[in-house]
Length: 458
Image 1 (cartoon, one colour):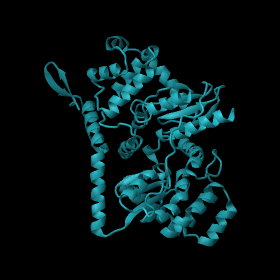
Image 2: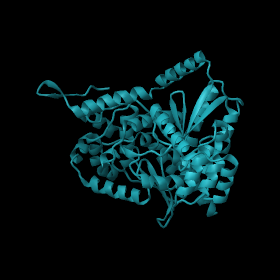
Image 3: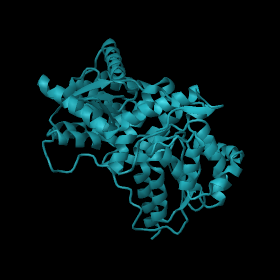
Image 4: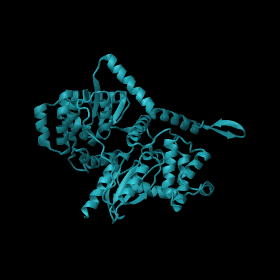
């Protein structure tokens, strides 16, 4: 990886922005190395054995969080399957710079939970357009606030079901049976949960923590199951995991181009880097029309990311990439000028039929090969990897037409209730929206919906 120096008049100088980018890239690359993860896991297991402790998994449950309710449904089976001690915390939702679009997140999370639940063999009740009533959420907290860990695991799904179904009678019956904790005790339990979560370095609900690593709800439970099985904590070794990520299946039915898959990538997104080529493959395998609509990175749109969240994203991306067999790391952060330079070339690349190739090459160079795209040599490497001519590309470096294009894409993404990347929309022949989801781990949902739409026509 190149040092952050540039030559000026024969002397080596350092640009502060480049130094920061270089240092960040080095840290993130180290963080993502599988050897480092393996060492950390081995040390954690050695400490556990020396202390004579059980495997301890901490659960951070947020009552008004859709993903927490999905996770709640698998906790009893998880506790029975694995030789672990579950410690259950009540937490409030994330805030501040960790949630740049809180209203959009609240709405999307309910819609998203309903979309993914069937694929995991779960259910999600309630409406997409309204959160649970505040009074019912408060009652749910008071019921859960008085439960010990065992009772919490056994009853949290029932409490969540009553909450999200807005079933006051069911909630009242649960309160009668399980009891209600005093308001002060509930407040103290939420404060303790929030404090513990912060101590361990996270910010969201619906999370699991085990021996140095975070696992986001049912979407990441398969990572934890695999880890516990490798440590001999699986009481049913050899059986399929409780929760498996559905595969991204582009067949057997094939579209004639009447469906359109819109892909909203960003050139600075680790999650985009590990999913962009797979999104293109899904479109190709299923025959749907592909429309790629790039947007600026969130940071460059005025939504700064916290260090805490950034670290988790890189760690999680590396883990997801390994599971998918996708290269990730070494990385070199392309924020700022490299992104602008690549997007300046994008309209020209599209004219050459190589727009998707340019995005793919840029992401691969930045996030799988550690190429410094801030340098001309790095950008040339990107351009030539995309099958484009560098001498011709240099003629288009000042093109500004990309700015209006990307802004139109951003507005379309927000209109669909999406704001992060990668995001996806599936449209029918009339252009009406069939599905709008955010996340590299939602490609399987899109694949299933494509097949469902095609099957309905037969």
